[in-house]
Amino acid sequence: MQDAIMSAAKFLHVKANFDSLIDWRQMPNLPMVEAAWYEYEFAHEDTSFVYEESSSGKKYNCFTKGKKELAYMKEYAKKIMRYNNSSNYAVGVMRLAYDSHKLLKEK
Image 1 (cartoon, rainbow, N blue to C red):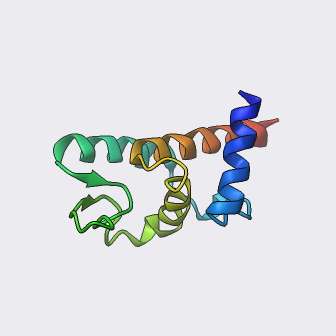
Image 2: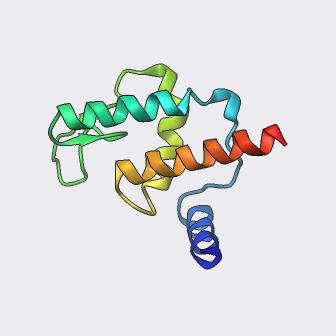
C-alpha cells in the first residue's frame, strides 16, 4: 500500500502538476457531491465527472458542466484522472482524501 501511494503521488506531482495541497475551504461537501455524481452517472449514459468531450471527439454528459461551485474540485479531479481516467476513481480518491482530512482535523 505504501509503495502504491508513493508511486501515485510521484506520478501526480510530475505528470499532472499536483504540487500544492488541496485548500479544503474551497471544496464542496464531498459526501453530497459524491452521492449526486453516482445518481447522475446511473441516470445518464456516457458520463464524465469533468469532460464534455474526449480527445477523439466522443461527447460526454458532463456532471460539472456549468456548476461554478464545483470548479475547484473539477480541476483536482482532472489531475487525478491523468493517473486513472475513471471519473469514479477520481471522485473516490477525493472522498478518501476529504475523509482523511476531516479525521486529522478532529485530532
